[in-house]
Structures are given as C-alpha cells and as structure tokens.
Length: 224
Length: 236
Image (cartoon, rainbow over the protein chains, first blue to last red):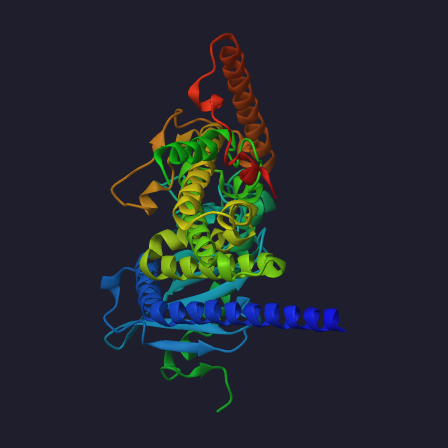
C-alpha cells in the first residue's frame, strides 16, 4: 500500500513539475510573440512595399497603393484557396496597374506564392515570388535573390511579356513548346511559375474594369 | 572552470568529438543547407545560438528537473528557445530571416542540441555547459562551412553566393569562369553524402597520422591527461 502511495506521489509530483515547466515556457513564447509582433508587422509591410516597388516603378502611380486594396475570396483561377489581395495603382483618376496575388501548388515542394503586376494595357510589369520551398540552389532561381544570374534573372523575362502578344498555347516553358526559358535541371519550378503567371494575367485582364471600379477594401465578387 | 577544462572542451568540440565528423549527429541540416557557404554558416551560427541558450538554461535549472521526465522537459526548453530565436530573427534581422526562414524551426529536430543538453548540461555547471555548447556548435559550423564551400564550388563555381543578403556591400566570388557548366550532383543531396564522406576520410587520415606520431614521440600533454569529459560527451 505504501509503495502505491509513493508511486502516486512521485507521478503527481513529476506531472506537476512538467505542467509548471510547460506554463513557464509557453508564457515565455507568448511574451516574445507579443514583444516582436509590431516589429514583425512593420518589417512585413516594408518588405511588401519594397516588393511592389520591384514589380512596379514607384513613380508610375501617385495613390497610396498599399491602402487601395481589394480583397478576394477563394479564387481557384489564381490558386487562392484562402483568398488574397489585389492592390490598384492609379495616377490621378487614371488606372495604371493591378498587382495581383497568386499561388500555385505545381512546384516541386509546397506552394509558390507570387505577386503579378499587370499594366492596364495588358502588358506585364513584373513578377516576384514571395514565398516558396523549392530546392535551395536548384529550383530557387525563381526568386531573383537566389538567382545566380544577377544581370539577367530568370523572373525578369515576364517584364516584357503580355497576354495579348503571347499565344495561349505558347504560354509555357520552352521544354513544353512554349516561349519562356528555364534552367536546366529544374523545370518544375519554372513551369509552375509560368503557368500561375499566365492564369493570373488572363484572369485579371478579363475583368480589369470591374477590378478597378470596385470600392476600396471590399471583397471582389462577393454578393452585397 | 579553469583553463585546462576550457582547452579540453574546445579540443573536444572543434576536433576530437566533432559533431559532423566524429559523432555524425545533426545530419539533417548538413544535408539540407550545405549547398552554399552562406546558407551553411548562417544556419550553423543560429544552431550555436540555440545550443548555447539551451545548455545554459538546462544547466541552470537542472536541480528542478526530475530524472524521469528530463527528456520531455529538455525538448520543451529547446523548442521554446528555438521559437523565440525564430521570432527574434523575424523581428530584428528580417532580411536574414527571409533567407534562413524555413530552416530555423528545423534546429529543434537537430539531435545534436538534445545530445549536448542530455550528455553535458544536465550534469555540469552553467558556465562549462555554455562553453561546451559553443565549442560543439562551432565544430559543426566549420564542418558545415567546408561542406558548403566544396559543394558550392563544384556545383556552381562560386563562393559566398548570397552574401549580399546578409550585407548589401558584400558580393560573391566567381571562382571558376562564367561559362562553368556546374556540377549538379554536388548540389543535390547525394553530393552532401559524397563530400561528407571525403571530409570524414581526411579527418580519419589526419587522426591516424597524429596517433602514429604520438606513438613515436613521448606522449603530448593533451593525450596524457585523463579524459574528464569524454565519458559524458560520448553518451546518448
């Protein structure tokens, strides 16, 4: 009987200690999270603005781009299962460009997240990969920061493409008979990005006027 | 802690019980990030940081941790510290975080962190435990850096590619001419195994040469000392 009691005492004691340790370290994590949240949010916004400056020249528009946002519900054409955002660049009353978020699961590992900037004349202004898990040193050239060709990064070829000029069947990597280049040894990542950019451009070009005229902050396509 | 102990911990960490070459612990990051010098070294240093913090924490709290539940508590501590380092990186070194982002949480899965906590920090004072963690970690860093350098050089013909993400004024070295076609195998995971194998062979060759020399000459001070920490470090 006494050994039973001793065992009970030991196990409740260790359980209690485990609980105390869990509580202390969870509190530490929660505290750090709260402490770092504003800084993380600020860096995130700054990174977002820097990213948008890369795909669209900052002097081509004069509105507060990050605030002129349109929300999207789940949009399979853009690969957005959870919804996403569109930023609208304007110069005075003139529509300049749409910056569309898109995702694709066709990559080598996990989802690839993109922003695609499309001029109102249908010409692509630029594309950037914002998140990916492609193989480091192999498929990650889709992100210009990891691209070894600094003078002519792979993603730069979209800056001269236009949905009107490139035939739908040609909107593919050269290996698939299309018009876009890729790097030997890692076709899958390039193919995924090319496909996603094509779908995003087609989707946005087809409903450009509606996208520009929708009220700021509203969810596009939602029934009022 | 005296100078003798410090020297012993340094020698153990950097050479004798090197995590990458002798203990072969922590192969996960060795395979995943050693594709370039910058990736390998950055993640290595983040690992050193987590190791030092975990060893310090465990050595300080070791009186309060019951033997039966030490492993769950250690893992809890390591996971919490890694999360904190992850958040700190994200907040204060955002550019570096964007480079290393997906690898930082993987530090938890690196068994070398738990191994040092269990084998050393649970039995020693906070100061020696921290020194042990730093030296063991630096031992991993130099192996990772060599591995990264060899793979990057063979695979891409460059060194320090991506260093501009750490500081914009620095730039990569192009070692081989621009038209170097690249050797894909070196970048792929098998390349990590081959290169690591070559490094271990070199390590063993150096060790047996040193041993042969020590047999010929009167024993040096380092080998003559009783290995005080060897038994603790070899466990787990």
